[in-house]
Amino acid sequence: MKADIRRVSFYAALIAFAALLAAGAGAMENKAKEAASGTGDTKTAVFAGGCFWCTEADFEKVEGVIDAVSGYTGGSVRNPAYNQVSAGTTGHVEAVKVIYDPARIGYEQLLWVYWRTMDPTDPGGQFVDRGAQYAGAIFYATEEQKKLAEASRQRLVENGPFNGPIVTEIRPLGEFYPAEEYHQDYYKKRSIRYHWYRSGSGRDQFLEKTWNASAEEMIRKMNEGMVETGAKTAMIASGTGQMIPGMTDSGNYVKPDVETLKKRLTPEQFRITQENGTEPPFENKYWGNKAEGIYVDIVSGEPLFSSTDKFKSGTGWPSFTRPLEPENVVEKSDRGYFMVRTEVRSRHADSHLGHVFTDGPEPTGLRYCINSAALAFIPKEALEERGYGRYLKLFE
Image 1: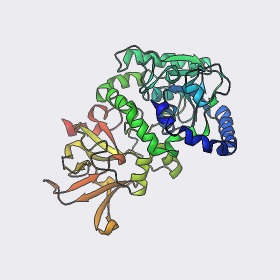
Image 2 (image 1 turned 30 degrees about the vertical axis):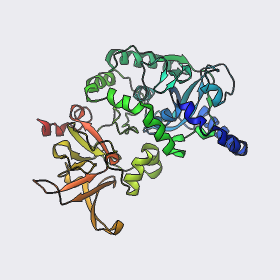
Image 3 (image 1 turned 90 degrees about the vertical axis):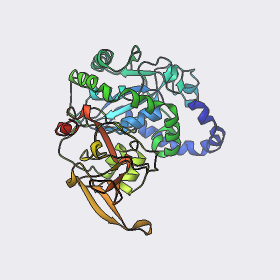
Image 4 (image 1 turned 135 degrees about the horizontal axis):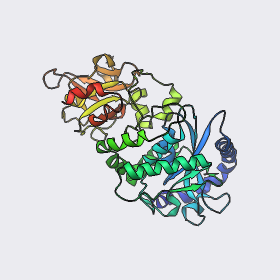
């Protein structure tokens, strides 16, 4: 299906391709060299999880990952082109080379992130992309990586939330060929087209259904079995708004620099939290969420609201009668759009959250109208695991 989508613009792209080739070749070569060698004390890991647009985007949002490069590996054809690989004639798969800082995140943690981005029970591709060229695989460069990958897969077999057999292969890494430059950072360059493709692929729907609150005990068991190398790292939310295991409440709520935020947040999350944007009503993640738990700032993790104060406002945005931690919510006057409103922001991350109005229900009469993209939800079953156990009393 992805190949069919791209063919719509294929002939138009051919016209511009010759002009772009010379300019793109130098940039692609530089990125290839960087991916092959890394810089400083960086290390690399290679994963195939179906569409490399999606896999690259997911890994680039992880703390400790410096870069992710889309490419091809596993086949016999040298310097393959996308049209060859997508046709399934080269033996290659779409894959991503992850360049990471081992002092901030270990290979074991990257494996854990990988399992959370794909369907390891699918032998025929990934989601709407069918064929061996879209199959999931872990490519190891050393015997240590092989051992860790096999152990991680076995933990998934024993403790994971999947009913079917785990079929993801663990294969030796051969030559890795960076994909064409227009594929690199596709989720940033063509964000609308990327999100249209991803939302229609079924990937996020599968991940959200699979890795829900009922999987928390499995998550705990898997994390207990992990051998950590490098610093224990808090990983940020994925593009779906899910919390990746490992993001815990440190109590040290810090706002990263702009460049880090652009890597960690989706374009929508960045636009709303950093540029005072507003998401569409009824087309956001948490407006209809009825699960018990708390909502924290997507940037810093500071606690903001609780499901115990959430109510159905009919507006299409998550609405709360009061903050969970009032000191973490700051009010400011907003005179934009020829109106006078009260904006609410997080204290530590200074994220734009939404607005507060005086048309809410008792006991406060307030309606905190909040953008889902500014929030991450932690279900009550995961509060203890992630360091927010002090809030369990809310649900007794």
